[in-house]
Image 1 (cartoon, helix red, strand yellow):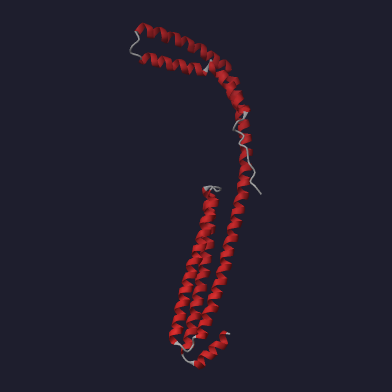
Image 2 (cartoon, one colour):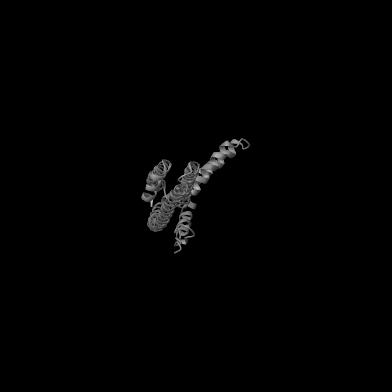
Amino acid sequence: MESETIINPFENDDKYQKYLDELSSLRKEGEDKIIALKEEIRDVKANKTLEKDVKDKIIAKDKKLIKEAKKVKEANREQVKSIVKEASKAANEEGKAYYLKESALAKVDRAKEKEAYQKKIAEIKEKQALVLEKLKAENAQRIRNTAYDKNAINEAKKENAIATKTNRVSYHSALEEAKNEYERKIGSLNSKEEKAKEKEAYLDTLSQIKEKQAIALEKLKEENGERIANASIGKKNFEKAKKENA
């Protein structure tokens, strides 16, 4: 299901443009004119090319216009205040609705990504269990086939150690890939607090996986060493170990 496109209520909205146009019209001969005239007075005072009497005339004229503009500003004060209040109320209501809708969709997207991530971890764990079981079976078979050959037993032990190490590297590599993929997808959806939460949950899961992996490898190592030790003491003990292993 494709994500729903949410329209930002503040983009290309004629209603808000109307508010701005009304305010601009009301302020043109009042607030805006006062600001412009004060700037002109400041510039005239700083202008060293004008004679003093010219400056005085311009400043006197501007001050008179400022008084008139202040009257316009005062006359429009309540209307400006009313428009600002109305625009603010509309913006707050539409902004809240926009935020709630977008937050709900973002929550759905995060849930989907989390579900996909957990599924990926489950697949990796399942494959790991199958590989370890296969290594265990292959190692037992090699020992049975080479029981009377000490060099062959040592070779089987080395091969099993290499295979186990290779499997462990591949296992952690798969977990790292899953982690990177998850963080890449979730990064653009979460706030800092949500990212911290997701990271904590992920680290907890990773810690549990590592603990189980360490136990599995240790068990494999112990079983392998025991089988080789039993096989090396002679035919009688080997036959006994063979029956027990079967």
